[in-house]
Image (cartoon, rainbow, N blue to C red; front, side, top):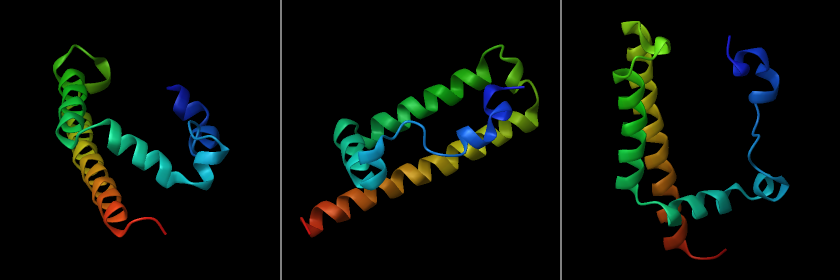
Length: 96
């Protein structure tokens, strides 16, 4: 059982965001988007998935688990794209 399963209530909330970030999550999004190109994120994300499913990792021995990981990858990629679109629209709109 993973640490995440043992401490669900703790890990079911933001743990990396500080108080300021919680009040202004757009600043985290802006920092992320400014620090990484979308193509780099896609490559890093795919490298993580590829490593997980191509290595001798007992977590991904079952085809169903590998399929779930690939499905999650697709969803996460959509979220990242939405973040980039949101940030681009926010920049185009200018400061409030």
